[in-house]
Amino acid sequence: MSGYKSLALASHTLLVLSIFVHASVASTSGNCPCSPNPTTTIVLYIQSVAYTGMNTNYTGYPVAGIQGTNFGTGQFGTINIFDDTVTIAASPTSTSIGRSRGIYAVADLTGGTLFIMTTIQFIGGQYANSSLNIKGLGTALVNMPVQLAIDGGTNFFNNAIGNVTVVAISRSGPNSILRATINTRKAV
Image 1: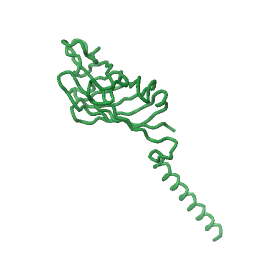
Image 2: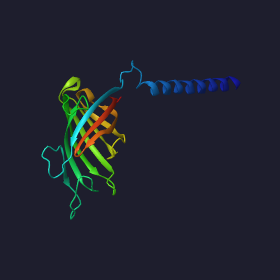
Image 3: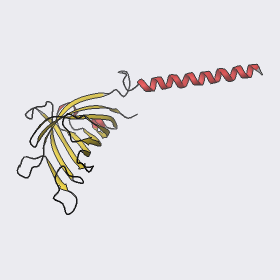
């Protein structure tokens, strides 16, 4: 009987040890350079120009809102579309490497929270002909970082997962410059 108990205890110990080792490897595999799915970090800049009713160079425009109201870009329920330039540096005249195209909707009564869905389509640089799909809730406040989820992409970003931290680093009238730090890896 004691041999049976020892075998059972040894089997249990081995099982617990193997689960621990597996959990340790799984928790570090995304950060290990030897991993088949290393993390890729990219910093890029999004040049955005809001519609004011007077400008013609806008890259974002409100297309729908609450019926019976004079909806604006920051009013609850307003849906905006955008087609912003993506550059390698903060300057609006720096090299363009793509477009950020999508929609955002004002998702709270105060107008401070946005639901954002966008695809960054790379047209230049090392990620040319690839795209990255991003979505989530964010804030419209300057210098307030927003974390959005990556839920796929094409070519280089096929099956990508991760997050994007976006912060508005400059606002002047309708012009905004957003810094996007992308952390992504391929889903297993």
